[in-house]
Length: 248
Image 1 (cartoon, one colour):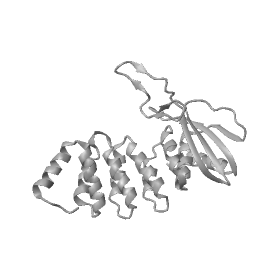
Image 2 (cartoon, rainbow, N blue to C red; image 1 turned 60 degrees about the horizontal axis):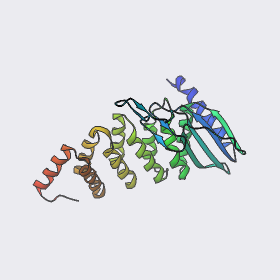
Image 3 (cartoon, rainbow, N blue to C red; image 1 turned 90 degrees about the vertical axis):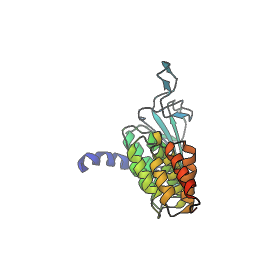
Image 4 (spheres, rainbow, N blue to C red; image 1 turned 180 degrees about the vertical axis):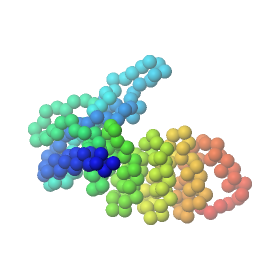
């Protein structure tokens, strides 16, 4: 397995070194987007490909590639701009790396995210858009890493909440229940659970509302349960009201 992973790791490291080798420049790169992603090339990105099969309708939304412009200043990434579709225009002072491996590009974005700052926060979405990657485990690690800035960790939690995998819910539960994690990040994870499809996060929200030691986290879970319109949430509220006042 390690031998299979090594080429991808090496490609990501090579791409990262090529970007950070530029002291002051704008670096462009393009890579394949995952299925279901399309865009207008103007910053409008659709995660459901813009089609309506019921009506036999399709939009002009372009299905890739992801195009990222990385601003490097004094050897540090200061800005990330990501689009899907469209075309690059010729521009002086720009280094265009052309089309690169999607997994390598995703790992580059995650490396930038770990460094923090506004660029780190903005790097997570293009990491998620890459084809042939599953990065929610990396995002969970970022969310639980106290050395990463809070804004980046909250962004990581948000995008985990968008991942269409039941396993992602388990990762969010781990963040919510970890008392060592920053409270703002835990609250973001509570919200992300409320966004899981088909009521997937409701059992975890109920457990948090009943058992978490942090009153603010409990209240956050209760609030989002109230927005869910889920019958399990209604049964919980009936139970609480029947029993009388509880700890807040």
